[in-house]
Image 1: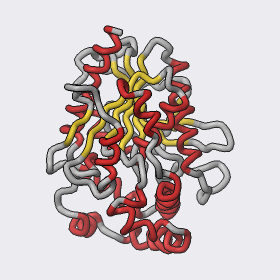
Image 2: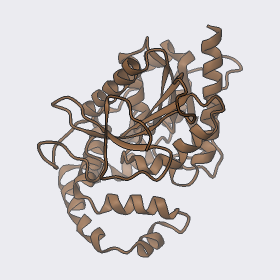
Image 3: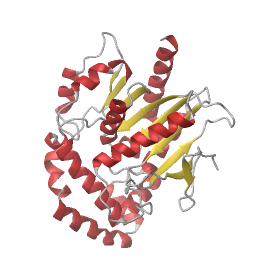
Image 4: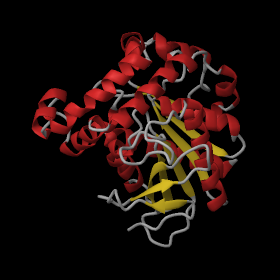
Length: 325
């Protein structure tokens, strides 16, 4: 089993199936424990020089992202890259709060938990460069960490970023009603159906292109009313809180930001143009990447390798820039 930093505790109830360790971050009250995955450097005993703090989208189930994050580390020829993936509190089935499995951890609480994870990494590895990768709403959370710790963040990679006016996107307009209290309760209670759903049936419902391992993660989610409720609650707060683009934050940190947009993304929609019109990269900059048409917003399901390749190029660029500065 991979060795853990001192701020993480083992999570034996979730065995690892790769070069990473399942763990939890025991956040201080009023926050609750959060599921984490830890990838130590590929070569045992190698000094950690670069650390990725990964913040997922919604639902924040880290098991969806293990192919992507494992591929990202596999491309690190220096063998000194470590990765901490930090889930949203209450989203991982079986990892709930101390007080109640039906607690209400707000979007603000998720931001605070990510800041605490960043601070723990900085304290444990004071010489390492700590950078953040955020997917979807995780990109917005990553920007909040950057705002609070701007002097310490080496770089931020924003994948399929939903960082402004989510409620005005095509999916936001279609789905926002489902996040409200009454529909949320109904949907979470319907998860009892998932307890009796065979994996082959789910495979046919969601599409045969889904890998079996990812289907198992999805099945675990739909069998958990607590996780569904937490994800829907977070979605509701995203619609209400993620509004105006923080242009000043983007401009002030322009040299530490990298963007990856899908060719078509109904969770971003016309907001992509709004973001790009306010955030103008330097002439000749490669900080804005437009993905291949076949890579969707939910890239982690079966396109982790392609996105990991791009993130690795960004990592090289970031490390070169920091070495020259």
